[in-house]
Image (cartoon, rainbow, N blue to C red; front, side):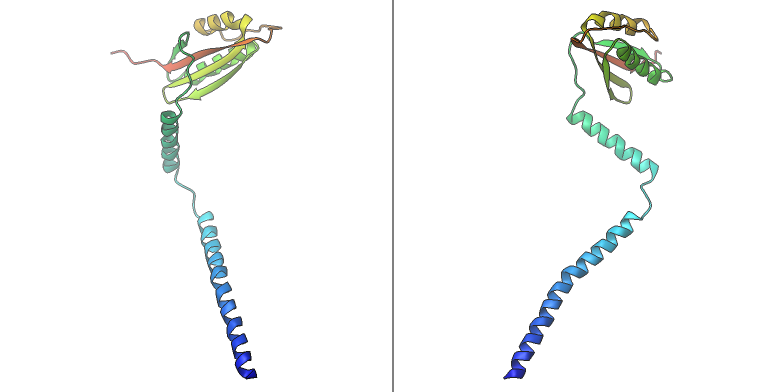
Length: 157
């Protein structure tokens, strides 16, 4: 009788170890597989760029860039001077005492500039006339938002 009880206990211990070995083996195997994938080569540049462009297009379709409606300033620029123009407009917003947020696209960038109400007209004129630098001191805090769209000039035939 004692040997039957001992055999049953040994059988139960073996079954418990087998039952615990299976999940432990899966964890070890999965961890090893994840480590191998982690140390594998990164995606090629072309694939990475294509994925980024795809995600940006999807995001623009689902979350379109905000618009303020009517009084939108549109500035056209050549491809070569596009980034320089966006930087100029952003700098002008900071120089009148405001801030600027950008939504970039392939052929256009939307700049939302939050500028002091007292400097709005000065900012608009500076953007329209291509002013590079200006400084307005002591602008009061009530602000307004000015939307500026910078887009690439269309080629004329």
